[in-house]
Image (cartoon, rainbow, N blue to C red; front, side, top):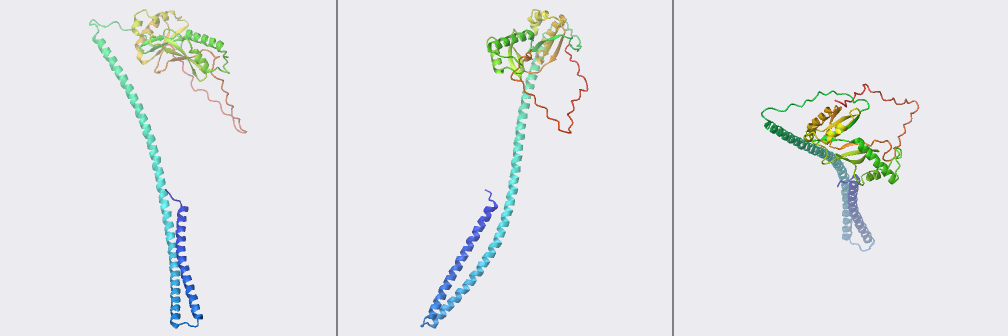
Length: 381
């Protein structure tokens, strides 16, 4: 344990006091003895019958004691001088040791900081290694899937008839352009090898009717500024029979204050490419029922469903139904905002006041306009 300067100085002072006390006691003893001898000499001198030899002995003893006193005083002075020199040396050594200890402690703190930084780097390296491992596993799974697909294609090629192949599918070149004015998109999901038409208009209306019934039953006020209790509305929406159709089950969730509908895919929903080629699919009947002058197909295509997209797109082309497609990679389900401005979750946040302009300070400049106008969206191709 580190001992501070105050504690070291106190220990040295105590040592010096002890030495001084010892020497002082010796001096006192010599003085007392000398006084005793002096008194004896005086008593002898006053006595009438003093023998000369006794007087000589007492006088010699007194002289010897005085000599011893002088010798002890000299030794005491030597001790004091030596103690002062030793004390200065000890203090100097203590200061050097404290300086060395401070350097060692500073070095230890630096080493501790370096060790902490090394641990952080180690954790970061471990995290990156885990991410790379997951990416490698994902890439390996994709590679295995591609190899399986390649094996299937080779098997189909091997099983192809000797007379030749069927006529190639004719695909028109894309012509990216914006959707006609007023045309409404109908989302069509091509995912996990199945195609599912999202009847979002009907499901949105069904959701609004159910929310309206919940409001009447629970006395909820739908005011966008006041807002409605999120937990109550979502819990009541999921109570009882679920809304949906053959392909999706409808869920209600929240994104901040905005309510959103989640179109949860059913396990047996949608149709495969083989079903579409059969000519009697539900998707084909739904396409025939769409007013091609008011709607267009908006395909959302995942990487594992390009084959079924080609078949579904061909059915749209046969009906002269305009269509476009967008590649998708998300793992989340398809969602839409609830088509109403009256329902919001929670109260409207109070806008923060603008900071006042100080005297002599210029007001902030408005943001500059965009340098280039936004490119038109290619909804149709």
